[in-house]
Length: 564
Image (tube, rainbow, N blue to C red; front, top):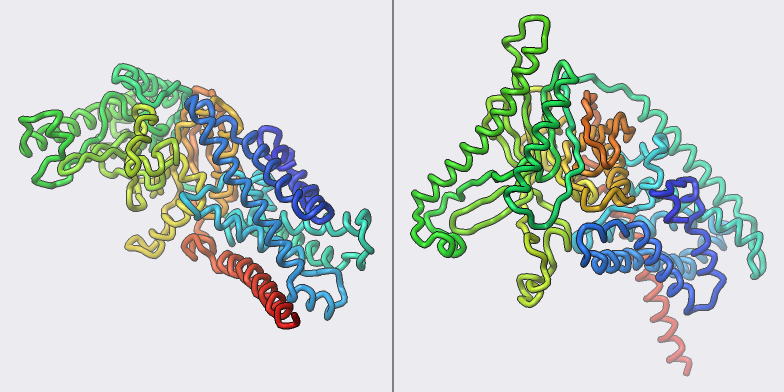
């Protein structure tokens, strides 16, 4: 049911009972079997959801299986922690003094679940995809609470409902002596749902301000590989250039053009010099006679060629608008270009980044952003540098460096937060970047998030839809529109309420003209810098439950020893 509640089936109502079979099994089976059964079935479910990763490379089936096995640990940890709570003295005292059947159990269950979700979003490199809350991405009133505590808040409500369903199921079918009917727990969860929907209705219907920006999101489905030759790279660039010219001809005004991840590289990359007066060993090996002055000339030459190519496209777009108009439009401005592009920094070191460039209407590159969060197994292999033999198994072209800070693209009409690929699928990354802007020198938030990705690797499978759902919840969590341009993936315009205003098929070769609304709201989630107080409390409670159980077990063992 967890699998069915999300794409490709998308039967979202199932999420409200999806945990119940596991939970019921855990409470009514023998001591050793349930956790093993839960782990195996969870692994199978996650692998089925993410099987599209195998299309990226034949060897990716191994990392995909490893990732599924890793994610399956967290449901097991949830049920283990739940068992600790259920057996704790704190709960026993609560139930005995209040004369009910665990009225706070649904809330405690929700707290424990999102506590472990928080851990998996931060442990290792973190992963947000396939959180419970993503199953309700297309239920706008239910997901507005994400601006309070991200997708965790939606997951909290889902688990609470599952807990009440379980309570009634155990009351009706349990083999043990029946406890009191769980009316109190039902009332608490009913009030939680009413509050969620009321808040959702209020936030959903708050007004936003129209902007005068017109953003063209260009999409194609170009096949890509880990290592492609310059000829193929040039073909991809030229295809996107022709596509942009065709799509721009359909619209009277375009202020910003956005290309997907890597598509702006072509046979050129944006090269910079790190300012050092020494050369890396790699550069010396490639060109033994290279000097610092020659390096600077090479960098200047690359930059000039890159900007000339960009300016040529911008002038073509502007001139077409002038030629196609019935009135004089000699002052038509060229659009800004934003797109995914490889970044190469040379000097004392040679570093390569997955990046984005912002080309102003003048044709000059004014801003770049280097991706700060890399894809494990896709863009780097853990311990590959420390364990040398691992490098023998790494496909050619895999392995890049990570950027160090958030970016900001200031265009004439919008300020944009650049975001690349998995940075949308790891919710805290964009949230932390926005928080950095809010509390940094900028002192305010960008108007929208512009994200570029290349999901052609996944061959149109459900992985692409999971990526899109992450973007939907992110837009609510940050109260910022998300403008996504993808190659073979989720090209979409999502407003600050998580509603998809326009989207393209995964294999589409077209464009979206987005006119994003400006939202003045600053979410609680962003204000707290990606770690809201609620989540901290949830983790603390989960830890307290575990510790209290350990201490109780220790005291019992000590007491038995004393009696003996």
